[in-house]
Length: 262
Length: 134
Length: 130
Image 1 (tube, rainbow over the protein chains, first blue to last red):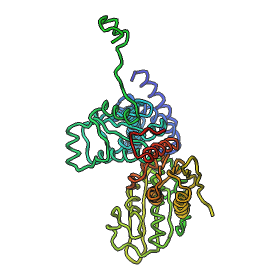
Image 2: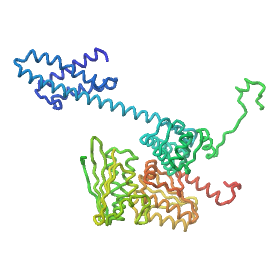
Image 3: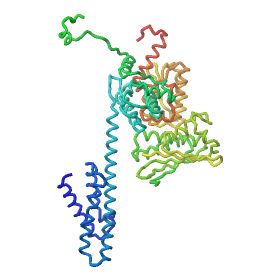
Image 4: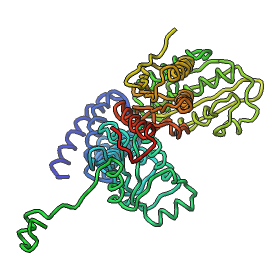
């Protein structure tokens, strides 16, 4: 945050503050203070997004205390009046400080929620492997909320693409607990109700152990060791086959001995 | 919990099951529920409405849009005039049925909701309340 | 009295459920359909539920019943077009309908029926049929 930004923020804030104080109302939630609140909301948000801490943001407001107290001391005619004035000013600034902290917090929460959403979408890419075959490589820990997003996007893509086989590859999933295993089973069951088959691939040995120890019944589900095996099975089910063909001319030119007739 | 708006519908015939579903859908859409959330709460409503008719001899439902700590949700309170349920725990098990159904009504509705409460002392009718938050 | 229409096409019966069914209407459909299977000699039934916004345990049970009854009457039933939200909810409800065959849409359901009819009619896997 540059000095010029701080300067312009400070100017806007003090201008709005002056107008609000003129009103004589000392409740910062009152309408007279709406400009002040707007200025603070905007600057808390931009600071929160740029990674400032809540105390840094609050200091912006609270650092006004000293100059204001000095000014009051100069103006005050007697001790009692000074005490009253300082009390009013102090209460006001505390309210504003709390308000700023709250706004900062809210902005941070907004950032986190947005990032979570983005990560969720990024981490659940549904890929078309072949006409009629979808793959969903799941990477990272599956919790209840994420599994639900994964499940819904996979099922929606099945409808959108008219795919009859979906491969759920969990090579990138470190651990599976009972709840997640059940979510996977539910996904498979839901896909079947829609008329598509699910194959689960990439189950790690330790996950296989966990599944058996937890007593989760995966008998109704087709499982394959790797995504490649699952894909081969999918093609077989679609009545397609991968065959070996003679090497192409590029490779033939590298090794003249293997002629095109091979 | 604040009630934002509420309506009461009769639950006496199987046509009422359809009108309860439609009323619940209308409110779920108003609240901006996702399609899956809409489907879940409508299905739960359908199960409970049918239960109230088949086992409780009919009754009514209060459908309410509620708010709590910044969250909004849908609250459905079914009350019937039936004999109540002697063994609530047993009635909540999957597959337990007294009417030759699948026995998924109560347990299924619970799984489809975020909150579930049942009061069913014998002789006072059954009251089931479910909430699904946005 | 309102009824869900049952169409006959190329040896199959096709039902497309377009309305939010109340329970009597569902029971009526179950009756009508089993009667039509018997009288028409159809060997396959397609039930298109792509327009249904919910399937609760009652409708789920009706679908499972139709599938079981048609099997007794020597006809195969395929339920087609269930929406993702409906499928998720039905599984959460505790109904995975293991006895019911499913397909993504009417075309694929028809292909499934043709394939199983071909396999069933010949009784020999090695005899090519078209």
